Image 1 (cartoon, one colour):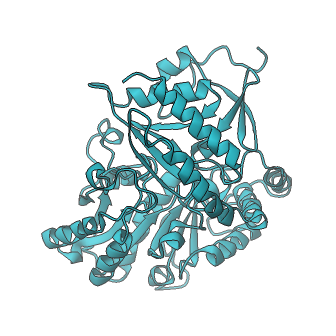
Image 2: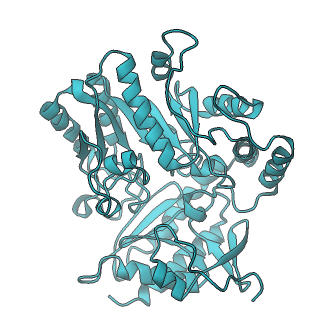
Amino acid sequence: MAGTPNDLSAYWMPFTANRQFKAAPRLLAGASGMYYRMADGREILDGTAGLWCVNAGHCRAEIADAIARQARELDYATAFQMGHPQAFALAARLARLAPGDLDHVFYVNSGSEAVETALKIALAYHHARGETGRVRLVGRERGYHGVNFGGMSVGGIPNNRKQFGPMLPAVDHLPHTHDLAHNAFSRGQPAWGAHLADALTDVIARHGADTIAAVIVEPMAGSTGVLVPPQGYLERLRAICDAHGILLIFDEVITGFGRLGAPFAADRFGVVPDLMTTAKGLTNAAVPMGAVFARKSVHDALMTGPEAAIELFHGYTYSGHPLACAAALATLDIYEKEGLFARARGLEPHFETAMHRLDEVPGVIDVRNIGLAAGIELAPRDGAPGARAYDVFLKCFEAGVLTRQAGDVIALSPPLIAAEAEIDRMADTLAQAIGATPD
C-alpha cells in the first residue's frame, strides 16, 4: 500500500518489543480530533491522548498554522545570550497560569529534561545559599521521572534501571501509596494512606535534614498505572519539607495542562511545590517542549554575584525553540477559548461512572480514577506479569480503541475534548476485551 514502509528494520523503537512489533506492525498514518487513522484507513479512537499529551485533540489547525507562520518568520534562535519575543511572551503567560508564586520558567524539550533541570536547580539553589551539604535527593517507589540518569535514579521503576549500572549516589525512595487491601476501587483520592508521607521523616532521621536537597513526586503517578494520592498525603509532604528546608518538586509532565480538571495538579490538590516540571500538554505534543516552573524564592537565590556572571550553567540548544513557543501559545489559546480544563472537570463524573462499570468484570482487581485518568488493574497470569494486560491492549486496538498498558494495568487518559459517548465506547470495549482474554 502506498505510504506504508516495506522495511521496518532501521528504526530502533523506544519502550517497544521491537521484534514482536515488526512482526505485526501497527502504523498510524494520520489523526484528527479524537481519532487516529491507520495506514489501511481504519479509524482508532484515542483513549490515551497519544501518550498523555494530546490534550486538545489531534491536528488542531490553529496550532499547525502557528507553527507554519513561525517557521517562515524565525526558524531558530539560540537561547544562549540571545532571545526572541515568543519565548518571553510564553513565559509570562505560563507564570500567570501557574499556582502560587511559581513565576519563573526554564525551557527544556521533554519531560526527562525537565526532571534533570529541576534536580539541578534544586542542588544549585542550596549551593547558592551556602548549604553545600544538601546533595541528597528523595524519590518514590513506582515513580516515573523520565529516562535520563537523574530521573532514573529518583524514579522507582526497577526495569527502567537494571540495564544501566549504577545510578546517582545519595538517593533515597519513599514507599508508594498503592495498597489494594485499603484503597481498591477508590473513586478520586482514597481515604487511606496519608501517613505514608511520614516515611520522609525516617529519611531525615537517617541522614539529617541538612543533607537533603529535594523530594520529587508525581502528584498522580501516571506511567506506573494511575496511582492517586491519598487524602492529606501531599499536604503532609509539603509540611515536612517546609519544616526541614527541603525543596518539594512536583513532576507534572502528565498532570499539567488539564488532565485533572485544573491547570495543574497543584491547583487540584491545593499544594504548591517549589519546582514543577511540565511537558506533554504544553504544546499539545505538536512540537517537543517542556518547562520547569520555579518559585520566586528559588529563582532569586541564584540571582546573586556580578550581573555579568552566568547564574546557572545549564541549558539546551533547543531551549525555548521558536516553533515550540508558537505551538505552546496556540495551545494555551485553545485551552482558554474552549475552556478545556473546566470541561475535563465537568466530564469527570461521567468518566468515573463509566470506568467503575468495570468493577465487576471478572479479572479486574482494581479501578481507580481522578480527573480524566483511570487505571484498571487486572489479576496477572501466573509467571507472566503484564501478559494479560498486553493481550487486552491488543484486543482493544483490534476493536478500534487505543489504550495503554503499564504492567498489569490498562490506563485510559482521553483528550479533554472527548464526548460522553466516546468515553462509554472506551469502557465498553475494555470490558469486552477483558472478558475475552483468558486468565
